[in-house]
Length: 476
Image (cartoon, rainbow, N blue to C red; front, side, top):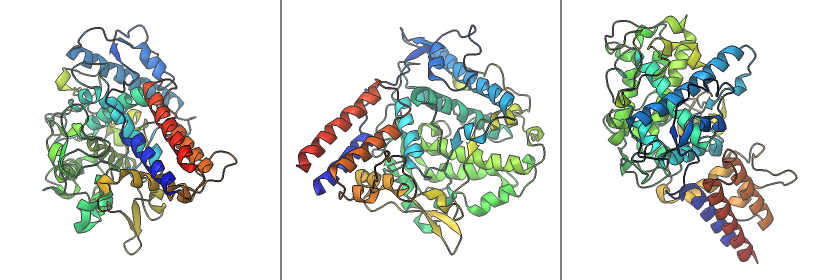
């Protein structure tokens, strides 16, 4: 059974990391006129409906195509906002897409799903032939004063994050959201911060230099670099508590009030990751950018809920952030249509489109994550360290990852009538039938949003069949 264990690990490694660049996302279209179908997305995220807005690309696309693409995403967001607004008194909270901390369980339905969606968006060239669709969205972020250094920092980035997720959902499926990076979990590691498991192949890969390992290694577009533990810093629990102690937005948006300046704490993390993340013009090309901003948005949402009349509490005194100024994405000379003002981005209309799971704490068992530890003496969760040589040990790491949360609770992979022993499977001690059933359920759960017959689905099926045949041979 040692050979069986080896093949299981090899299968998981190929499954997670070896999607070839030639895999074509299932949306490969040019956005066309949509004026005659304004209500298409009233029922929510619908990939079939999304395709009705798009037509196959027949020629090299240009900047207008990027603007039209953003317009389609924006219409989708607004349609969902209209639907949510009309049904909010009847709607259960479970119907709202949820963002969880990166390391929160279950891994396969949280970070792994996000990573696979990013890879698909990175390999999608249906909007512009000379630029993948992820890079179109990443290049919107320029670090300009319209996006930063003022009141609109919160609202602009909230809308930007929704646009990004709309694109991920369009190519991958409605279940994907951006997990948030609670960097206080790593800050609490003290002088061991640079050893966090976050920068292992299980999550974001290479910590120093060009990203050549992990899910985001060697993807199309500009190269990603990092130099973690740079001149900035990670966000502490005390910093978060200080920000949340204030009772008006004007107290957390001004640089001179550094103790409560939430954007300032955000800046420090960009500089701590360093490399690509340290430059405003290219920061969004590193997929960790979005996870960092999801956390910034999470804390802002906690703040909004603690103060009186948050939607109307828009701070004044920032010339480049007027309350009635319309948001724009300058790289594409694009202004959202229908327009949205900086102040409108503070509204509940967009806040209610996402829900956040609480940050990991000892009280919630560190979100049931195998990659977090409850420090009993301090009463907080702390990130585990990457194992020595962890960057080269993805197969073994992912094998243990899939069993960590399932052993304690009903496994999402367990087939009816089959009592799985995940730890035995990871150790290669399970019988062949149990191992194969376990792998089948892994595939079914991970790719439930991938339509049958698509290139990605067929690739996974081929890999699965090949390795299960090898398991059968070696078990004889």
